[in-house]
Image 1: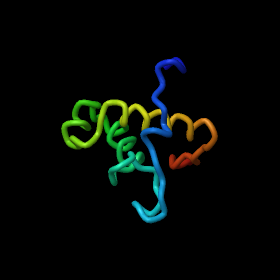
Image 2: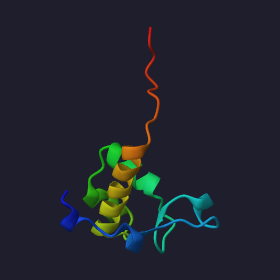
Image 3: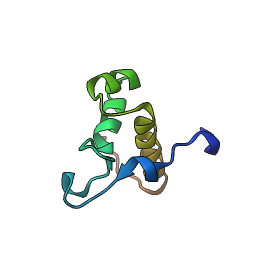
Length: 84
């Protein structure tokens, strides 16, 4: 995705200690970025996510994905695969 087509995450995402234990959420909702990323990882389409959460917009899902990509650039999670 080119930088010109990116959504402005600061307009779409927020984090507050009193909402969802401080997890990053879509502004004005209690929908966490983690739940959106989990749905995408499970194979749900953007259309299915939007149908199940009518308070979200396509740009909200894009902002969540962009946030996830940014976090992945700076964090690594140990593999849970067993090494025999």
